[in-house]
Amino acid sequence: HPDKNKDPGAEDKFIQISKAYEILSNEEKRANFDRYGDAGESQGFSQHQHRQFHHFHEGFYFDESFFHFPFNSERRDTSDEKYLLHFSHYVNEIVPDSFKKPYLIKITSDWCFSCIHIEPVWKEVAQELEVLGVGIGVVHAGYERRLAHHLGAHSTPSLLGLINGKITFFHNAVVRENLWQFVENLLPGNLVEKITDKNYIRFLSNWKKENKPHVLLFDHMPVVPLLYKLTAFAYRDYLSFGYVYVGLRGTEELSSQYNINVYTPTMMIFKENIDKPADVVQAREMKKQLIDDFLSQNKFLMVARLTNQKLFQELCPVKKSHRQRKHCVVLLTGEGDKFAEAYEAFLTFAVANTKDTLKFVHIYNDRQPEFADTLLMDDEKYRGKSAVVILERRNTAGKVAYKTLEEAWQGSKEDNFILLDLLDQLRTDPGLLSSETVLADLNDELAPMFLIRWLYSTLDYISDCWDSVFHSNWREMMPLLSLLFSALFILFGTVIVQAFSDSSDTRDSPPSEKEETAAKTEKNNMSFSKESNSRIPKKGFVEVTELTGINYTSNLVRLRPGHMNVVLILSNSTKTALLQKFALEVYTFTG
Image 1 (tube, helix red, strand yellow):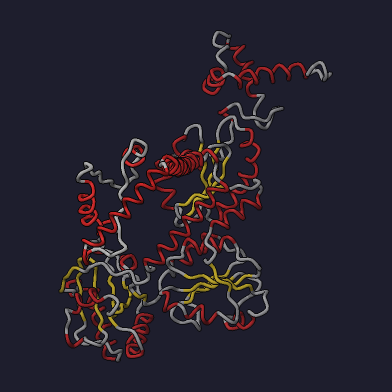
Image 2 (spheres, rainbow, N blue to C red):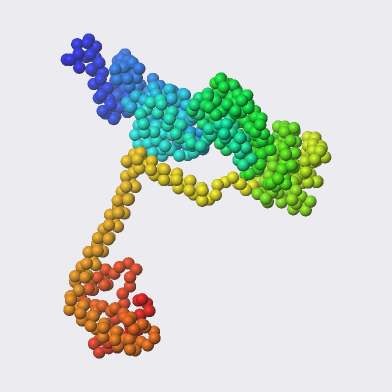
């Protein structure tokens, strides 16, 4: 204020602040300012005057002014523009992609001082996490209200994480460490197993059960790097990951066996042979691109087992042209020691004859009986033995061209020569695959049981409800709370009204009538027991209440749901006889 501040520029600054407050407090002026750069009062000004106002406008830019607020939309920070999300883009691309990598999303808007406050931290963290493979998104609540509402963001700024299509809000202070920890907590906790001398053999030997290559990262960091966890999440369907902290006591044997340089991060891929890695990469600084290139070339075992249709389609793709022909050599075999020798011979052949146009796979006949029966046509000579089929997928509907080796596969030298000769002929004569058939989709052998899937779904639902109760915006919870309290009120009110109604009926019945009714009932029961022979027990009786003006409302008008009353209209002369007959007929329905 110029009266309290003797600075020469205080008066001008005070005028600027007053004008800015006037624009902010008036919706029409604020809208004009957003669209045209003025509040609508300078339309009749000269060009010189408009320039002066424009200079005043620019004086309030974030980095130059007293308020540090970006009033001029032309001079806003453009770093968020490449991350802007729209509703259709979010639904069609971001959500499906969240099953491969987590997303960190910021909800922002204009005229948001808190958004400006967190901007430096957000910019730094977004750049760091994007390099590691985290998806970054920005939603402008003013222009994308539908998307902001879909995400459940009712205030700005809001930060949230998206993984596997599930949204989780960030509720802590916006600092670098908290944001990094938030992203790390989004990831499942069992992605990377800690490996030592005690468990590395068990870990690497699981390739057969899991049908996956196993990856080991050797590093001198005590905590698993976030980059490695993100990589494990992206490739979790294809690879299993372990981490070896080389500075930890108990990893010397492991490091010595594989000749590890403890000062350089090393990544190894193990397939069917756990004594020797199938591939190795070393680098002083592991970059995401380097890791992706390394893993994408080693996603499958040398002779992978076909356990589901998706894996079959990836390993044996449909040919797109004559130049892109890819053939699959399939070993149809069984489980157990009986078939081990045939499998080992096939694996040795596959390692020696690996080519880009050939994929070697195997399948268990008893787990995929329909697949095996279609190709072998239930031939007796293959029963209880292994067989080799060369096939080529012709279309996505399951049509294949194939040729089966005439004799069962035993892994002998003769079998190897026959198979090698067929593969050589196939390069020059595609017509060698003379048989055609249509294969049904493979069973998913590794799919969890229904009960386990239901249990996981229930746990996720409970977790979501717990998070909603303690962290969701109360505006979101109001409809649910309103419904809950309404149901409780109706239930409580019904119970109270019914209780008062029953007590009123009891008080309304006069004692004289009760005694008279009891006497009549006793008399009727005595005569009833004499006449009813064996149909009714001697102590049985039917309660009949006399309908009067006092209990008319409670017995007929306020009849309970599901209850039925039968009214007998009698005269004094017939009452006794008819009541006895009535009791005899309805007794079996009242017990």
